[in-house]
Amino acid sequence: QYNQEPEGLIRISVPKAVGRFVVHPHIPEFLRRHSKIDVQLILDDRYVDLIEENVDLSIRITDQPPPGMIGRQLMTIEHLLCATPEYLSTHGVPLHPHDLAHHSCIYLGETPGDARWKFRQGSKAATVAVRGRYAANHTGVRLDAVLQHIGIGSLPYFTARAALQQGLIVQVLPGWRFTSSYSGGLWLLYPPTRYLPPKLRVFIDYIVNCLHDEPNLPPAAVKLPAI
Image (cartoon, rainbow, N blue to C red; front, side):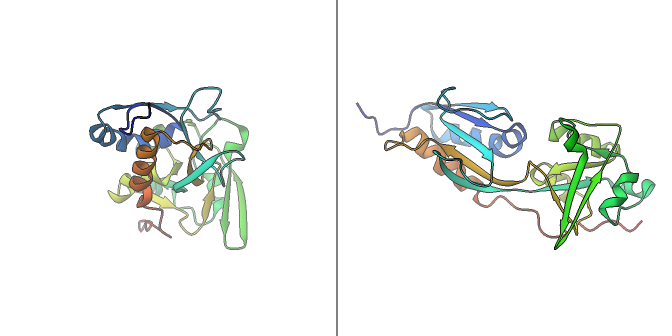
């Protein structure tokens, strides 16, 4: 018998960093509001087949929903480069992407392409082969490495935002758009169905509302310090 009251388990697949920094902070309040719903957050960067793996919802960075899936765009994921004022004071401020070749850069490190950073500024484009002594495939680790003055790190804005606002780090090359495979629309995806269980309907409405006003990276968000 169809029960109108939302209840049951929701299994949600989400990229690791998005799950930790964007989705997870809103889950405790959802659980408080819906005492009969349980949530299993599956933090994994790989593609997950919702049907084969019995997953209810998938949150992914993509240009558009893949064929055969229903999607709701939650927010835009933007990437940027950051460093501490102390690092820049010691090693200098890059004025052009090519200057990064002379800096210690903290990058993802999963594939060779992760060390080739791409930039756009209007009609201009630049690709730079970077290097550094530290690579890590977790944005929280890269943020900590930046805070330890190890170098210039690539970070999603949602990871860097608090440290930027506190003045602990600053944006590097704010006049250039840093492009990354971890940039683009963040979509909530699920298979098309005539019957959307109440537990999923209330979660979708909740997370869409929570992330609707998630701040995006403003142009030249943080001014570089005078060195």
